[in-house]
Image (cartoon, rainbow, N blue to C red; front, side):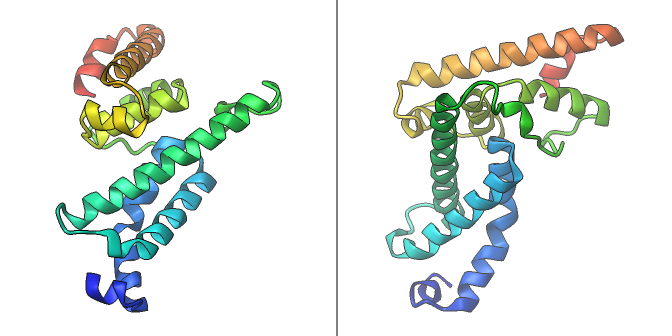
Length: 188
């Protein structure tokens, strides 16, 4: 299929698109928390995959290569959005406008999923991205640091602080119900 893709075969492109589009869109939606950004990132990812297919050397699984392109595309989108937001008045737009459908990858009750999602949404875009990359995608800290062009401690510290903020958010919500955030975060 890769050979056909490199030759410009539209059927090969279609098959690759259908094989990976849902995974890429879901990842982009979780990280950007915007359907339009997620759709743009998905489209941009496939454009890059199709244009750069000759660069795939086969040293890793094809999905890993596609995922790396998707992550880079999403991170670029988040960087642009962050720069744009810094230029704008704080009153004109906030990240609170962006919503994500609750579909965590761990098995939790519906109410716990909602609580965890609300806590996740309190994080800034960088923290959300690090949490997603490490906890959901399973990407090692060194690779996360490389993606952000930062040190290893950046990834570890960001993840630690993000989890703490999520715990604090969960604690404030769950104490009302007599539950412990530790129980939910342990499952998370």
